[in-house]
Image (cartoon, rainbow, N blue to C red):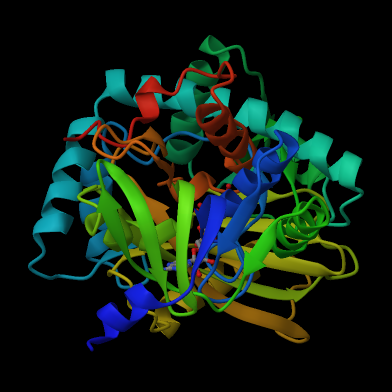
Length: 426
Ligand SMILES: Cc1cc2nc3c(=O)[nH]c(=O)nc-3n(C[C@H](O)[C@H](O)[C@H](O)COP(=O)(O)OP(=O)(O)OC[C@H]3O[C@@H](n4cnc5c(N)ncnc54)[C@H](O)[C@@H]3O)c2cc1C
């Protein structure tokens, strides 16, 4: 008998909702479904929070969040590509999927679409920040959560004036922020070295230590009855009458009533086997976590020109940045890690390489239009997609959990999910 025939005669476990992936998104979906009274089995090929959700900058940012796809983005990207230490790298390769993704990115980079994206992502992140804060309080999660705001630090006049234009867009969606001249900026962030010319303060944006948050939330979900099947990789699916009838994994098979695809940057290949062709590119980024200097930053900072985020997390300080479109290649490019580190040393007083807690890489699951994929597929009635959050997966994870739960339970939606449809590029 072949492997699959053997597997077919094997014991199959029935489950209500099977969530694939235990990152910030999958865990939030599980948590919300449990609160709505459903039973949940999470299938995770490694450990809870072992993907992109682990070592990111941990920002929950409704105010500061201009989309990547915006007017001038292609021109800027071409300029960065010629610089090996620039914030963007695209590995040259013949890939139809990458071509298609870049084409859709180009189509989304006009002012009308980018403005709409700004508004939609802000709405998601605002609701998500509210839910994140509520869950952290209700579950007593210890994850260095705070809402002191975020400071954008600009080194050039051009950078500051582009940021002030973004501020106008933010204001048109009801947001607010304060422009800081050099003196005010240095008063607000005394640990900055003297180079910046000014900045913008986004009041009320939040930040947390993402691994502590996601693992804490998974423990809360487990206490409510979630079953976490770790080291359990989903290998494929069987379909019957327009439904997923079986999930084949490395640790036996499951017969689910509902399936949620929340496998981050790996969702594309899993979706492919279900005829769900998501334009999704893994965008590798790096972070370096060191000890917080005695007079280090108390607020998260975005070093605008180098695109490096700085986040205080208790006794640690994390620097995160760069974006590499090189597929799911796990290699660490030390030149690009050094880009992050050099920006840290150039801007922040007292930063020391030791004690160094971790150098990390992760894959952001990026859609070309900077909007997540949330919703059902027309061809499979029991599959809900929850991925494609790109740079905002921590920011938008809680609201995604809420919306997916509402889709599955048939409750009225907090937010219209039509713009996030997984088939919008079909
Ligand atoms: C450097 C950097 C900084 C960032 N900063 C921020 C930030 O400040 N704020 C913010 O909002 N976002 C940030 N992001 C983006 C954020 O990290 C991601 O959007 C988010 O973590 C995605 O969460 P996820 O749950 O979709 O994916 P992941 O966390 O990657 O989880 C997917 C899970 O699916 C599992 N999986 C994959 N394939 C299978 C399979 N076949 N079977 C079973 N399980 C499988 C994986 O093991 C993984 O655990 C940053 C990202 C990077 C790289």
